[in-house]
Length: 546
Image: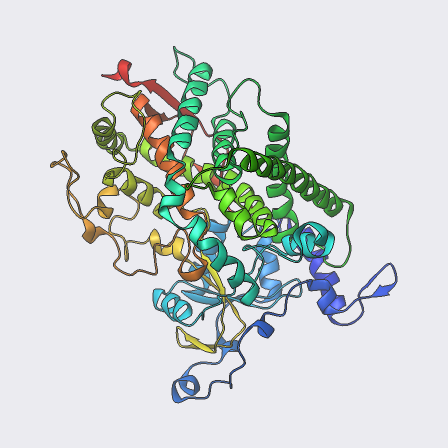
């Protein structure tokens, strides 16, 4: 969360002064709205009379909900405190141990309190009452850059990450048929397969034939694969990032995307004064946005010229379909796809590969399925031979059950709700801790065990010895939600799944993969849960392991 307790203390003292009307910047007194730089979420919610029914009256008041005080929370993050230098998984787990399955997280930095709940009945109540325009806190820097800094480019469109209410719905309704339609996504299979093959070729040049280890950072290489893949889907352009001569602009764009993730964590997640004072660091963040916008615009303009000359027949690519909707919408969606498709997909892939590498018997079962799909490892992946891959898809689900890229899903309540017996007023933030429940024996039998079979309905074709055990997974549809729920389900879900499936097929058809890290895979908190530390695998060619 915060780098250290001193930073948090200084920031909260300044915000406290501002709330009391005593805070100034260069002698100028500032209002609370200026400090927050956020939308008034209550203004987006349909106005309804306050709830006053019998169940509401019987529920416990909101202010009686357990949770740490501001100063108690501060002490947790000070050096020596229980939560000092913890990631989001560790923080959520410890606070749950201290305060139970529902607690209030104090609204520090001038923000409102947030309710953390680990009760699946609360999840259902929240989702069932989110309305047609669910509200979820986005990245405020997105809106600022696109609407305030560069309205000339974006024409007031903030994008799916940061828009709320009708503005969000207007964009989502336009792009859903493009990005959530399976046919549109799977038309990229041939090129994504080619990119996966190129990644395997690159891996082979980096692999020591004696130790079977890589002479480069696997995570870095994987990011280049992820960015090459999403760039083709979003821009209909090959960047050459897996070759010896990548497009210089593509390499710059990949570098700026990495900078964006680092800056976004610093200015959108950690405490920051940027909403009311543009620090030199935040100005560098805006420059990164400018660089991303400039390069992306150039690629889109080049694609438009290409489409005008060649056309693309009936099967129009994603970019061509987005441009058919609106050029500004296309610009925003392409940038969002590129930003979201780099670290998220590579992080999810490492998590899944880690669990397969730590469970060689499961990896071997998967390889048997892949050998059925590709009897010759050089054969192409097609619509036909990738239709029936139940064990592969079960492995992906199981990896994301154990560690999804976020510890929970967030909503702003649009109605007065009763959660775990407490009154929760409309306009309150609710964090639903799905990751904790996905790792609980109460909902998933033997939850610490990597057990893909729990996701199977029956034994896969040609593998009658695989024992499906669907009883080992929760039947509650609100617990396993790695891509979110409802209208705000991740728009890139189908793209990410296709990319991960394709590379797993190619990688595990060629190599037996073993984990070489000194301990379990570690994670750090950025705007996602990202693998970090000692990430090393051994890649033994299948021919040498038979």
